[in-house]
Image (tube, rainbow, N blue to C red; front, side, top):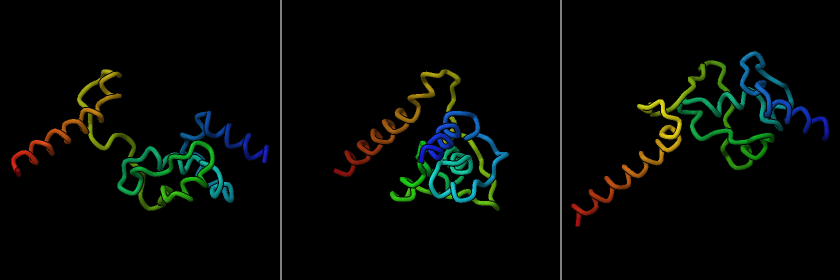
Length: 115
């Protein structure tokens, strides 16, 4: 178990988890968060959205239904789903919160017209 923990810690804390050189790690794919799983986590393809949250052990995603394996026939597109119009690091961190607030305000406005 110590060996698995050491390997998974090394993979998750170095740039190895971001590589496309490693394609498959065999049986470790069922237990650890591998580079393949991490690529899916950062993908914006429809099947990648809200998947593979695991930091070290992918078994949690398998258990809670948030696991998705990388598809061989569909290259992963990386990036944001909705583009942001700023290069300001602070604005980029709260952009999604602004979008959610706007949507809630629009919903409340529509509900006020329905009454």
